[in-house]
Structures are given as C-alpha cells and as structure tokens.
Length: 67
Image (cartoon, rainbow, N blue to C red):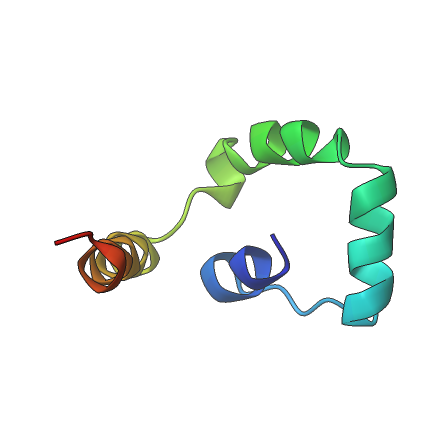
C-alpha cells in the first residue's frame, strides 16, 4: 500500500515507513475504506498512470510466472 500510494497516486507520505507499517498492521481494516475512497472520481488515475499500472502487472506476471 505504501508503494502503491506513492507510485500510482503521486502521494508523498510524511511518515516513516516503519511507523506506517506498524499503523497499517493495527488498523488494517482501513485499507478497505481507503480502497473505496480511491474509487471516487477525483482519485481515478490518469490514463498514463493507469497504463503504467497494467504494464507493471504484466511485468510482474512475466517475471514470476511458473514454467
């Protein structure tokens, strides 16, 4: 989630990564709420960001596909 927010939404989190992970473990139910918020029109990714997401997903599948 840390990397997703920075890469696909251009956010700059002003919290230490370790602190973010501790928070996320304790309040993991917030992820569902955050995903719902990110679906709203104002947070929809721009076409170039969306294509980057699909490109990275494809690269991931190719790199980790079982033979």
